[in-house]
Picture 1: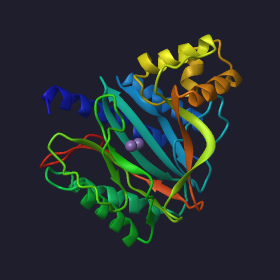
Picture 2: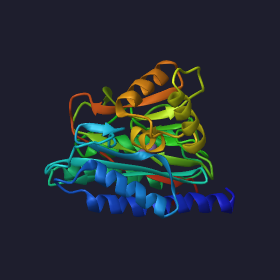
Picture 3: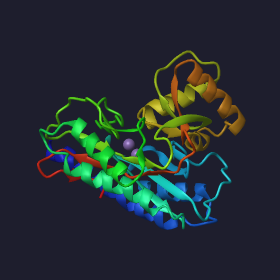
Picture 4: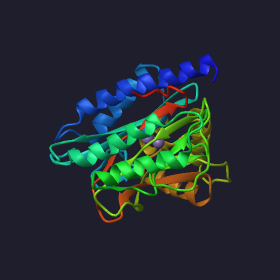
Length: 299
Ligand code: MN
Ligand code: MN
């Protein structure tokens, strides 16, 4: 990998880790989710980063893809476990990292299972190793601690402006024959749960991604697609950002338009994901550059 590109990956990672730890320090019972999300996003911008996706805050049985809605009134509560998942890019070079915060939840072991699975997996991100063996370590580590890995959420390859670039790193053993090579970039994200080990989609959607320009009815629809393409670089975005960019939109009209754009294939939607048996879910994630000494950009 070119030194210049590596430095951009490192810069994105450094901005991310500072924003992540700042965000974690803000999460307290009674604090509004939207306040934390907006402060973290503000910090990322101030540090010179751009968003690879909206700051995700997924609580308890929700595993992923939750973020603050427009005018969101929800607060953090005593007893919650909170997945704070952040994506930053610098010139398209992406860092993706998450940690789980416990507010007196008594679920430290569940969190530790995903943390330990991640640290064991990261050690294996060397040229020549097979993805199936990385997955095997993740699954075994989580099961040894008495929990289940979430089988249908995976780590993923990262390329410039591509958050999910083809190759996946499942959290359970598979037959994936891909052999890691120097310079590959991956996000690894073990999810542990005391539930059934699977997530399902809910009917809540806050996050979308550009797919294609299709014929649309409203001028605002065209504007949303051009913003998603040009300003968000076809990376995932959220409703809060659109309301700020397009002043003529009301939340009601925005929801109507987004539904149409998903239906006609212009946008992909990312519903909030929930554990199938309503188990609690923990997640820990880092981005790593494959090397003999793997470079973890988001430490
Ligand atoms: Mn993530
Ligand atoms: Mn990820």
